[in-house]
Amino acid sequence: MSNLRCGTSLAAITLFMETYMLVNNFLMERNERLVCQLGWPWIIQHRIAYATLFVSATLLIGWNAYRSLRGMEHVSLSVSQAIVWQFVVVSLAFGVFVAMGDLARGNGVYSFIVQVVSIVCVFAIRPIVLIPAIAATFGLVIWQAARLSATSHGTLTSFISLGLVLIVACCVRYHTRMCDIRSQERLERYSFQDALTGLGNVRALYVDVQRSIGKRVNIAALDIDNLKTYNDRFGHETGDRILSLFATIISRELGGSIQLYRLGGDEYLAMSTSVPSDEFAARVAKSRKVFESRVADNHIRIGKATISFSIGYASGRINETDDIKPLLSRADVEMYQEKHSHHCAS
Image (tube, rainbow, N blue to C red; front, side, top):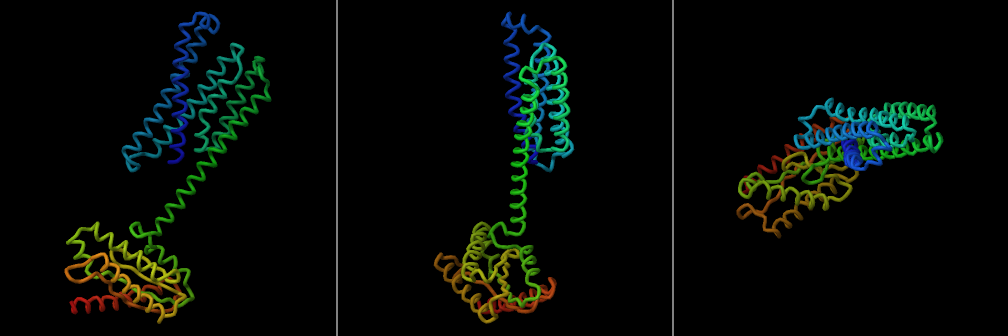
């Protein structure tokens, strides 16, 4: 879609250019000297070319506006490509059309170069196709200009102009490609990140488990107590603030050597391959005390009870990725046992 946006940006430029050219063309009618000098065929020929390019650019801009309003799911990719390509073909075809008329009257090829510039941004769509297309049409115009001795500034100057156009096109292509790469990197990063808390999600967990093969891991299943009751009473927006506060406090208390993941809802997982089991359990337990203290300071309560969370531990060696599953099950069982004891105590 960045290619379509790129094509649309150049179409907007072309639309402005052609509007200016059309207005100027109509104003020529009022100047009898110009009409006599240029002749009505020249004026009409250019008017047809400018008007056609104006319609073509308007179609591309209008289609992109429609696509944005309706959303990507309603848009056919083949239609989008056809809309862009009609603009490319029209730009080249009428560039040749105008240039041939100019050459027949002894003028240079610079109007064609303007038309080539107008499709520079679309170069980012299919450079392998457009380089031969631009080179072929340019060669045709240069050949005709040489045959009519109408290369007023010389063939070398014309080819230098073409080279500058292609250099700009390559810069556009590079910029578009870099934008695509950065967008792809952001999408990949977000696919491993929980949107609410910024913690790693389940996908991130399994990537880290894959990296932990051959090592012993300690995990702790963490589940906030009675969060559903809090959501029902105060709303999910307030519940989301608790989830975010939990992630901030616990991840800071655990430190960089213990990774924290949000598995979904109010379920979190702490995992480490470098911290010994006793220290691991002690740091997780300490983080619970800090969390309870912080929510109490913020007067976050359900009735008279402050919000806390239950913990379940498990340790084991990871020889393959699936070895994490029984550890997760053991940690969940222990965590739910503790949660049940909390309910009984309350």
